[in-house]
Image (cartoon, rainbow, N blue to C red; front, side, top):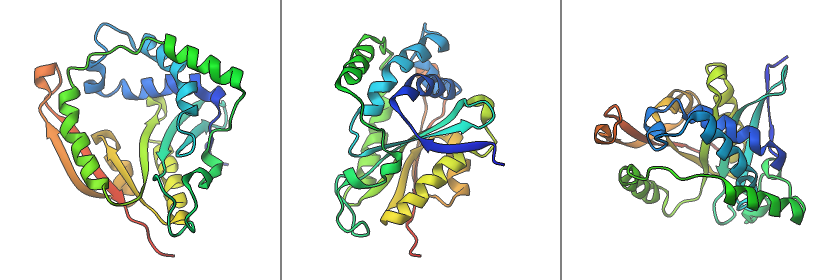
Length: 235
């Protein structure tokens, strides 16, 4: 029996996913820099308040998956995918709204939506934007690479630090790759160094990379961004 299962997310998963995401990214020394003066527990609480609304945002294009520890029921991994603006030839011109319904977050009542909006607005998500200038060339290259072609974008991948090296990231990524094959799309990801092993293991090719010196901001001197694609293979 497998130790972990991949399934869709609901709005009620929001708090657990918020805590998971912050725990995962707190192991990235550059990401921690933007939260000067704040603890991991404090930031995780704010993320937990914001996540239900994030799960409901742009539901036509965004797809969400979680990895669950079967024995405990704990949410230990998360992936967010973004479909292209238009449908694909393989999907017979179907709009993004109708693609991959299994990973779409179910709609909730207007009252629940309003609650999510209030929690989102009340959360403290103020952070140091000094590193934004390092992100500018990264976003420019991402836009340039993706321009003119439809991709299934792996927009976010997180695995709880206590559960790493158990195949969870690979399971989440492979799930999206299978769906991409079904609808005839290449998969694109802007990855960090920590995820390169997963991406290369499942067949992603490195298109380009940008390595910048972040030591002036208190970092360790290597702020890396890696642009990778998993090409669609005809079956």
